Length: 513
Ligand code: KIV
Ligand code: ZN
Image (cartoon, rainbow, N blue to C red; front, side, top):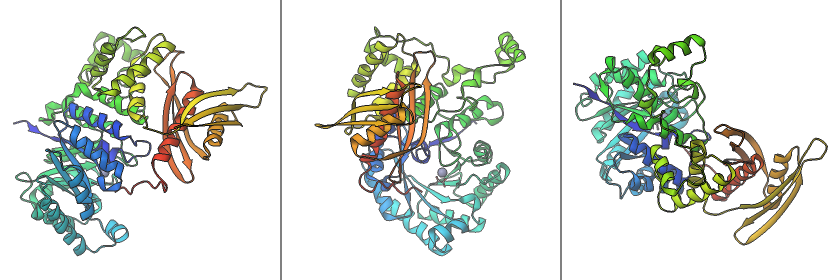
């Protein structure tokens, strides 16, 4: 009989922890709903103890997600478990994920705990999670692949005895080799009799050596019931196993796998696009499944082959991942209804005021450009979801530039009722604008990253700016787009400034596992 693999998506927890991937709560909710429609079984929504914003995000995702089980992460600490309990109090389909490191390296240098202390912490905290009313409890021995085998098995048995019903084996630093990881999974199934019966076995692989997918597949081969993945493979350092790569490997080679998932693969590409636009982390052209080059053929021999018979050089049908949709170009005469339908094609459903704000932004762009492409719409959606409730707004700006003048800028900005003005010279017009914003708002930011990309193609394409600013030691991302790249730069800088202000006085980023 075909075996079902549970897909545990951690895009919004492990994925969001990666540099440049942070999202606003609204963006996380939109992503969670889209990932839910994609058909994953479990969605890890965040680490609620780490900050009030994370807590709020987990709570609101718990309320928004309709089908998947919503998971909150906790260290072996009561305060963490309480935060998951409270954030998911109103969620009917919930799960807690409790973890503690079991490798000698982590226990000695990070936790400063002995083996016995770790074992009793597992029993105490998994038991505590049970007492807090969680029926579904996942336990992870962090850095499992560098843990001493006998001790890790003891840790896992302690977790099962205390009430865990999913055992997740994280290759936290992407150290394992496929045969080794697969063997470990198979040995665990023998060592822990509850596995395959009342307890699920789960794989969680990082990609430091580019082996996250291979290791996850080795785990499936060895009998894992669940695989933890992120969309586009985003995650700490080199990322996590990519959801799309796993799902499509199992689908394209169904002849050898004979397993299935609940993922509706036609939603994969649209959902990936939404994530790329929300985070600004654009996948490289040669990225498996989603890269721009995946269905384009450069060599003459390949082009000839594909024209004669597509399958000569393509192993996937683009329709199966939702890449071949009819592109109906929108313009200023397109109504709200057409816009809504277009978004639904891309697995995007906006609520309440969001649709109205989007339509207003759409009209502005449609007035500037004759044709509004799908890429423009994605950008607008990510702006609507990323809108910050308050903060600085750009009223007007002007720049003077040319090969015979010193570049300078003037900006006028508003915050609440207050208006300010800044005028500065710079190395170029963008630098002058940033300095003018600093002068106007009384801040001092140092640009640490600046990327500009065209949204779609054509001379009238919008420019999307993604940047990172160091405000007194705190690194903050900002993103914006406009048909004018200087305006896009100014808005992205102001976006970072407003985010910095929202982070509060100390601006310390929450501690992450
Ligand atoms: O990679 C890891 O070890 C983790 C744990 C929190 C499960 O993400
Ligand atoms: Zn991880």
